Length: 116
Length: 114
Image 1 (tube, rainbow over the protein chains, first blue to last red):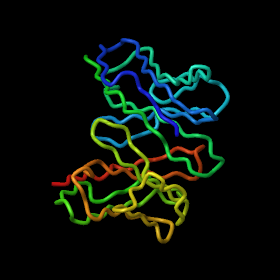
Image 2: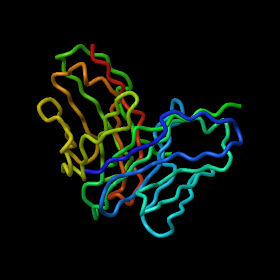
Image 3: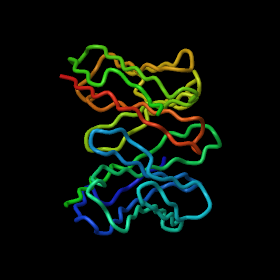
Image 4: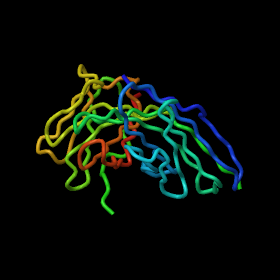
């Protein structure tokens, strides 16, 4: 079975700082990769996703992530964070199923706090 | 904007009681998922439906949990009897079909078992 590891459970940054959240997964086959975000009091929502092609993917609100297959990693980055980026961030993986079972396996999440 | 609806938003029950959660996916979404999120953890898949059929229930504790999606639209997740360890957020998500499509999550039902 696949698993996802997020390295940092709590991150505190100041506004305008650069952000990188680590995510590693374990699975030997083809995977689809996701980052979800949960802002305080809101639903989980998709930040970005990787299925194939360019390993550098761009998402909403200036976020991007890079898939490095050799390292089984999918780290999330943002060059300059804002106070409104305070949220819980989840990395998720789904083995490619060709339309069958495709539930997501999530990491434990990273609680990001941006100080004004 | 279309959303996944869930009810109730909060449920407090005593152990050994039965509880049920309801989910109405975004219209037209054939795939529906139930996840459980324990405090401080990421969501864990319980069951996946494609239309009215179960695609994956390998992580569903079938001795006490059941899920149905009789008409391939809304779905109900039931726990009977509830145990203290079932206290968690129960999330419903839906998507058009297949992992190529984004899963849209509902607000969840927060269950507390006393």
